[in-house]
Picture 1 (cartoon, chains in turn blue, green):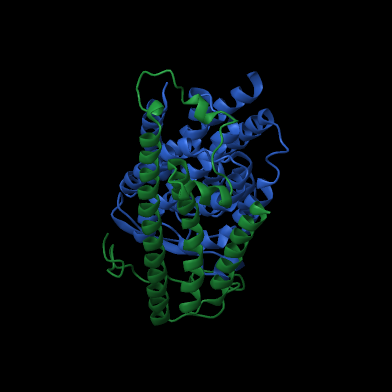
Picture 2: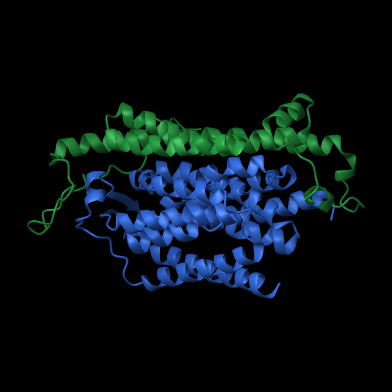
Amino acid sequence: MTPLDFVISLALISVAAGVLGSLIGLGGGVVIVPVLTLLYHVDIRLAIGASIVSVIATSSGAAAAYVRERMTNLRAGMFLEIATTTGAVSGAYLTTLLPTRFLFVFFGLVLGYSSFATFRRRHADAPLTVSNDRIANYFNLHGSYFDQAEQREIPYKVVGTTPGLALMYVAGLVSALLGIGSGALKVPAMDSAMHLPMKVSSATSNFMIGVTAAASAGVYFARGQIDPIIAAPVAAGVLLGATFGARVLGRVTSKTVRLVFVVVLVVISLEMLQKGIFS
Amino acid sequence: MTDPTEPTGTPQPPISIQSEQAPEGMGGSGRRRQLSPEEVAVMEEKVRKVELAISLVLRIGVVLSVAVIAAGLGLMFAHHAAYLPIRGNFSYQELTAKSTPFPHSFAALGHAIAHGEGRGIVVLGVLILILTPILRVAVGVLSFIYEKDPPMALVTLYVLVVLVASFFLAGG
C-alpha cells in the first residue's frame, strides 16, 4: 500500500468515524485507534496521537452545530471540564509508564461497564423536573432543548454533580492514557449519574471531549506521537463526517442514540479485551 | 458562513429555575436568590450570546485547520513523487514507522514551514485544530465576564489555566 492509498482509504474511514462519533458523543477515536492498529498495523502510540486529533476534530466539527441548536448544555459542559482537564493532565504523564496490553484490558473493562450502565437506563430516561443538587442549583446547570424527533421543547434538571465530577476526572484520565474512551465515560456520567437527557448527554459530551483531548494534545505533540501523514487524512475526514453527523442527532429518537451508543461500546470493549488478552 | 448574531431555532419558553414542587426544607438548596421571569429571560439571552460566540469560534477554527491541512497534504505529495503511485514499491509504513522523523517541537516546526515542507504545514494545521477548543474556552471566560456571571467565569478560567499549563508542561 502506497502513501496515496493510505491517505485516501484512511480519510474515507475517518468520515464514517466522524459521523458515528458526533452522533453518540464518543469522538472518532473509538474507530480510529482499532483501525490504525488492527488494519494498518500502525504503532499504538502513533495511533493514540491520531486518535487525539480525531477526537478534537469530532468535537469542534459537531459542537459548532450542537451549540447553535441549543442541544449542548453549555454551562454543565463547561463546569464539568474542571474535572476532565485535571484528569487529562494527570493521565498524560502516566501513559509512558503503563504497558500497551494492560491499557487494552483496562480500556475493555471500562467500556464494558459503561455500556451496561447505559443500557440499564433505556426505559428510564424521562427528564427530571426537580433538583436538590446544591452545586447544580448554584451554577444553574439545568437546561432545556428542542427535540426535533418529538417536536417539542424538553426542559430538564441536573442532579448528581459530585459523582458526575468524579467520573469526569476518570474520563479525563482515561482519555489521556488511551487517546480514546473519554466520551465513553462522559456520556454514562451525564446520562446515569446526572440524569441529563440522552441526546443532551451526547451533544454535551461532544462539546467537552475536544477540551479534554486538547489538554493532553500538547504532551503528545511534544513526544512526537502526532505523525502528519496519519493526522492529515484523519483530521480532514473526521471534520467532514462530524459536520454531517451533527445534522442527524436532532432527528433521531433518544432511544436510538442510546442503543447505537451501547452497541458501539460493547463491540469495542470486546475488541480491546481480545487485543489485550490474546495478542 | 451564516451571520452569528442571527437567532436560530425556536424561541424557548423560560425554564422554571426553581421548581415549585420542591419539598419544604429541601428545595432550592444552593440557589443564590430567586429569579423573576424577566431575569430568567435576560439570563437566557446572555447564554444565547455565549453560545453563538462559541459556535463561531469553533466554525472558524475548523475551516481554517482543514484548509491548512489540505494545503500541507498537497505539498507533501507534490514534493515526493514516490508517494503518488497507486501500485508502487514505496510503502506507507515507512512514513508511519516509529523511526520516521517529523516535526514535533516548535523549533523543528518553524524550520519545516520556512522550507515549505508539506509535513510542517500539516502539523501547523493540526496545531490550529488543537488550539481551537482552547480558544473556545478563552472566549467562554471573556463571555461570562462580559455577561457578569462570576461563578462561571471562574470555572472557565480554571479550565483555561489548566489547558495552557498543560502546553507549558509538555514543552518543558
